[in-house]
Length: 218
Image (cartoon, rainbow, N blue to C red; front, top):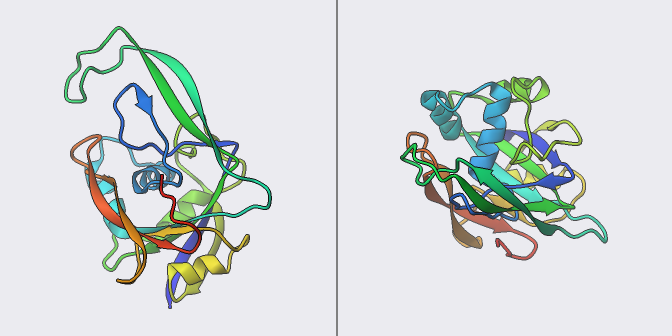
């Protein structure tokens, strides 16, 4: 049995960014690892210029995300049009365009339940995380600052044999689960959403294991 922290991500809009530069800003259909680390990092008071702490957080925890099923409600995406002044020409440079156009995707009518657990030798524990999601240092939001939460993040702390068992005890039951953990015969696909802390806006790949529901990552 292991210790799991259960979070609820609920709000009118969410946005979990995929690979992008300045123009098109797509959103994944479920929270990315980088997005969840950013969310918890904000609660813990971590800043962008603290790579050691950010790396410790990334190395300390695993995630399983369930897309919660709700009767007669399906997730939809919208695209919001913006113009942006002083956008970057490239991420390694301070040079900038004067003004560019951008298109930003948002998820509507969706809710997620997230199981968080510690890896062996974790420096940042789920005790630390539980304390700070109840009293966050910085205001958390659901991927972008324009996406506020409609309820507190904390749902429950429990013991379970696996993240799948942990999520099975949380209502509403049902929904596809995307997890850091899975067996060799579990459906899986590759995503590139593990932040390379010392290389801003660069990401490594990981396996995401799919449990239940339909496998529709995009």
